[in-house]
Length: 274
Image (tube, rainbow, N blue to C red; front, side, top):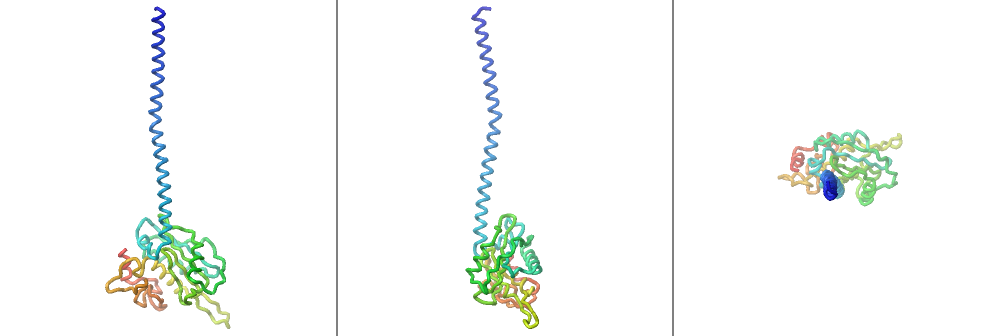
């Protein structure tokens, strides 16, 4: 073999070796490309989910703090499988467990959803007030709300204060936002005679009724979130015309609806309009 022939053979061999090496690199790149694309897609998916969560959270904050009745449809449908009741109370105004249990039953019966209470935050320090203006009551309640609705749980907030409503000693409760309720416990108390050592205790029937009445407002009653019936059953202020209704502006302790926490048939019909 001549030197030139040998050199040509070596060059060919080198070229073949280089060619083999190049094919391997292309093959490795080809095998890596799907993995790179998959990682990119996963990162984009995570970012998209994070953005969706943030937007959903912000939307829920706006709705929770919206007008009374804004959560009515969500209580009866929507992406929420359960309704949680956040219970906050001023020292000396803790609700009795029995009325709370009855409130949960009322919420379940008229929403069809699982209901439960969260009462783990402890007492709000005593404020030493004989009465609260609306602004004062709303501020203290808002400052102790820890839960925001987020699927699968829709949260309602009940705050129990150890003072009257300054507007009237007869105001037992007030629903002031889509998910926020204040109960003025002294308005629900009956007091024994001081001369025999009597003390003031909440009437459990009226306590449960006041809580359920406000829950009715959160649900959209009476005709807050839906058109009234014809002839009307509501008075235009969110209350029922029937004085024996649980949704009447003044609760009648002798009413079976108040005692048993029941809505009338036409009120249920209103809820079914949602």
